[in-house]
Length: 263
Ligand code: 16G
Image 1 (cartoon, helix red, strand yellow):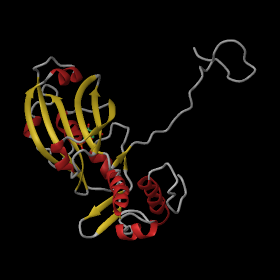
Image 2 (image 1 turned 120 degrees about the horizontal axis):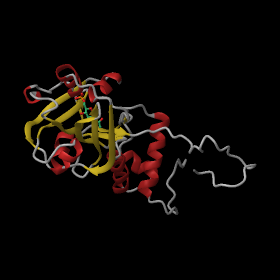
Image 3 (image 1 turned 90 degrees about the vertical axis):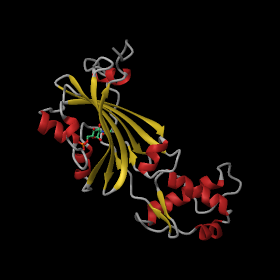
């Protein structure tokens, strides 16, 4: 990251963007989370910027989840983002592992006819009955995600009679229905929060979310299809990278001749 302690008026980098970098360095170097950052007025004076430019930089950092505002109090450093797990864990397990209190609120529960996409994802025919559930997930009472899940009725008959409020769906599938999920797959993409979800997630309209579509299986059979909107300001993904591997039978190196190294 660029180290700069003052704004360069000649730079082609917009001033709000330069201030954003300065504030990020300040957060990294000096400020713990929940610490108050200097006021807009102080930043205006310190860097010789207009109030509008200062506000633009701060708005950007708020939207990115690096800062948060409390009306009448000021702007504070946000907690580090949560790493989205890339394993077949449940929200409940994941939050407990982080020492946070998982919460779940049933927003909608019903049995309905699977539409084309849901049927396809769950290996059903369109019109087959599925449990449909919409849940708000919280961590230490902070809204984190809205999850829309579909489970074939045949796989878990009677699931609609069980409350999921502050319960783990995966635990119920295992305990009541004997279903042990053994593998899954997930697609993650960037999205803009749905207006209704924005209210639930306490996000401004148009905020970024991570849209996650998960299918989970047990003994080769699709059990769950869930489409979730995770707060973009609270979650990030981290993946380890392996170097591309050459086929084991070929030894890489300058002495080799012939072939292109790929099978
Ligand atoms: C996670 C899963 C979701 C699953 C839920 C079960 C992602 C993106 N999604 O949130 O598909 O339904 O866990 O959690 O990870 P629960 O057992 O706590 O209800």
